[in-house]
Image (cartoon, rainbow, N blue to C red):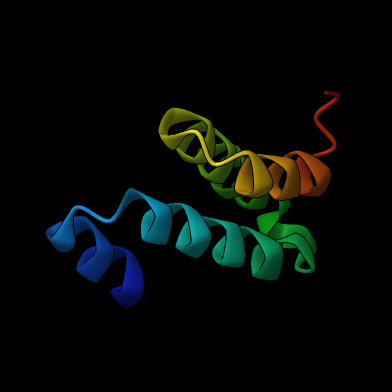
Length: 68
């Protein structure tokens, strides 16, 4: 969460997206936190789409199973 805070302070939307994606990836493997994983992955997807990062959007879509 420290990276997200720093990225937010700097206005680094890409950094925030990557951080949420990484957190979501880690939460995915814990059955108790799977729902939270989907929230983080969806946030990564939305932020990547917002800044026009098609590569990061694709990565996020792959993680959450979002059809193109």
